[in-house]
Length: 323
Image (spheres, rainbow, N blue to C red):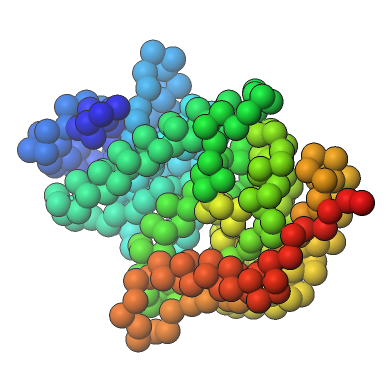
C-alpha cells in the first residue's frame, strides 16, 4: 500500500452521529474506503467475511452487548487481524480502560471528542505500522518455512513471535505509555533484557532456529514475571523490554538468575543449533519522575540503554561455547 488514504478502515461505534463525524473527517482528509458497524456482532460479521479485508480498525469502548475491549480481544484472535492496527476512539479516559484496551491488543488509544489533526496523525502512524507489519509477517513466514539463508532478515528486525501469548508490539507499548501520560505512567517501571551474544547466535544459525530461540527467551521472561503485573515486547536486536507495575518491584539480579534457570530446558537445543548457550542480562528498572518534562516513553529507551551498559560492564562475554 503506497498511500495511507487507500487504507480500508472499519469503524465500530453504536452512535450514528459519531460515524457521521468520522465520515466528514475522512472525506476532508481524503480517505476513501471507510465502512461502519454499529455493534460488535455486526463488526465480527464484516471481519469474518472472506471477501473483505480491513487495514485499520477503529473501536469505541462503550457499546451495548459486546463492548470494544471484548471485541478487540475477538479480533486479535483472528489470524488475519493478529497485527492489524486497532485504534480505540472512546470517551473513556480512566486508566483502567486504557490498561484493559492495550491488554486486549489495542495498538493506540484516542479519547473523544476527536481532533481531526490528531486522528490523521494516528492514522499516519497506523499506515506505517501496516507496511512494517506486512514486511515482518512476510519475513516471519519465510523464516518459519526456509532453512537456506536469512531470507533478508536483519538482526534488528522486531520479528513476530506467534507462539508466545500475551506479548504486545513495541509500538503499542510506546502508545500505551503516551496514552497514560507521565502522571499515570509513573506507576510503571521499564526493564530491558538483552540476549548476550545474540548477534553471534543470529550469525551462526538458520532462521527458524533463531526464531525458536527468541520464543524460548520470551517464554522464560513471561514465566519469570508471572507473579507481576507486566507488559512485554520484543524490540529487535536481541532485546526485550517489559513494563512492570511498581506495586510489585523487581530485583534485576534475582530475575536474571531466575531466567537462567528457566532457560536450562532449552540449553541442549541452543547448543546444537549454534554451539553456544543463551544467557540473559537484565537491566535496572527505569521510570520517569513525577515532575519530569521527558516523554512518557523515555523509560523504554533508558531501560534498553541500562541493559546494554550492564552487559558491557560484565564484559559482554560471548555466551559459553562448547568444547
